[in-house]
Structures are given as C-alpha cells and as structure tokens.
Length: 319
Image 1 (cartoon, rainbow, N blue to C red):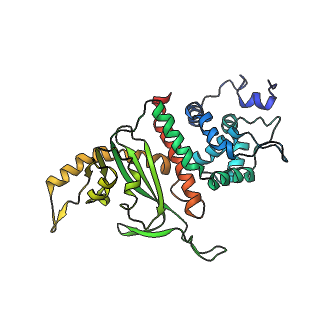
Image 2 (cartoon, rainbow, N blue to C red):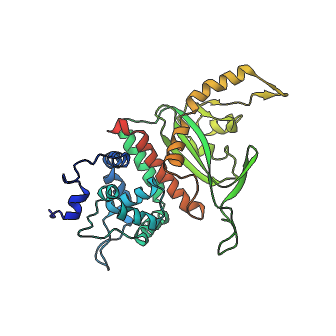
Image 3 (cartoon, rainbow, N blue to C red):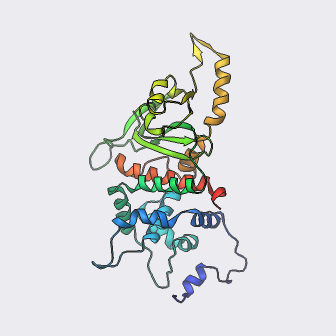
C-alpha cells in the first residue's frame, strides 16, 4: 500500500479543512463513482488498450476511463479536461490522482484514448454493456417504446482550413428556423424511461427512417410525436404485435379535431419521458453542439453519453 503524500491528504480532506462542506459536484461525482460498473466497462476496452512492455507504461485503464467520463459530464475539450483536473480537488479525487507522486494525464493522452474508442466503435459496446448491467439489476426493457429525435448543432462557418462546412452534417428546417448538424434518434423504454437503442444520422434524415432500428421487436405499444404519424407499416415490420400509439396530426381541412387532440395529450403523458434523457445529455452535460467533425466521432460520444445518462437516471434504483 502506497503511503499518502501531503497532496493526497489535502485532496482527501484529512480533517484539515474544518469548515468545508460537500458541494453539488462532490455529491455528483461520489454518486457516479459508486454506480458506474467500472469492472464491466473496463472489460470492454481492455482487449484494445495498450499493454505495458513497449515504451512508456500506459496510464491505468480505469483512470483514463474516469478522466474520459469527466470530459463528458463537464463538456470539456481534451486540454481543458487536463486543466480542470489540475484545478479541481473534487475531480482529482474522483479520477484518483495524487499530485505528490504523479502527473495528471495530459490532453494528448486523453485524445489517444478517445480515438481508441472511436476506432474500435467501443461507444456502442459501452452503451450495450450499461444496458446489460441495468437489466441484471432489475431494470428490464418492457413492451413499450418511446421514439424521438433531437438535433445536435454543428458549426456552420466556413472559416476553417478546408473552407467548407462538415460534409457529413446537413441542414434541416424545424418550425420556421433552419439548423445545421446531426440528429440523435433514440428508443426509450416507456416504463423505466431509459434509452435502449440509438441511431446517429445527419440532420436532414427524417425521423421516421431509423424507426425500425429503435425498436427491439417485442413491443406492444410504440409512442412518438407527430413526426412518426401514419408509420404503422414501419412499426409492424419490426414489432409485429405493436400498436401505434404515436401522436396523430389534429388539423384536418383547416379545423382542429378536439377529440384527437385530447387523445394525443393522454399519449404525451407517457411520451414525455423521452425528454428526460435528452435533458440530461443536452442540458445537464452540454451536448447540444458537436465538438468534433464527422458523424463517427460524435456517434461515439452520443452512445457513451446515453449510457451514462441511463446510469444517472437510474441512480436511485442502483444506490
């Protein structure tokens, strides 16, 4: 067992700061440290992670994974994540860094780790592993699925080296406004409110096209907003026993069908649960704009963020 240095003693409190109290960040990190299945997630990455023996020994896998999750939760660039660890006692305590005997992994090390996940498409595997852990803990996928999509913005400026926008992103119109970026499509269990499937596309892809990929096939009910109206054939192509509970368009011949509007309102009481996932990913963790160019890199970030959002939303059941 390593002897604690003065730096580590200060980071751990050690009774020196008599009047310090736990901040919201402290509580959040302590909660996530407890509920994240570190062993299972590290097992997904370990076969691809560098082994000691060739050159400088690699940073511990769990430590890099913790640093990578900090980057997600606080919406940080690679170098900004390094700076945040140097600045914040709470973050160092979470990652497990003792400045008295070791350096914080630099931004380049985090960049290489992120690219490792992108190269082997490990974001999808991490998302699936979280789902398996949650099901093993009793949060099983039921027979109702809510489908929805959200736009993640991308820079539309051409003031860059290529003098062009990201070719894999596209623009779309929503209401009276145009948006440029990508779409994150998700399928959420109607009982638990946790995401069980996801697809990433350019923003100009209509919500209905990835619909079959968002269903697991055992649904009895499928909920969605009016973008999925009249897609019964697409739904039953994947889930033959599913009933279409998507919201229908209420305006016919210039008049509003009040009975249909009332039915939509009742369906929306269930459908609204999908917004909790988007609220965590986009509002709480700041993934409302892409940080990287290309769909593949942002897809990896999306899958990891959804897996972490599932853990966060289920934290009371996992504690």
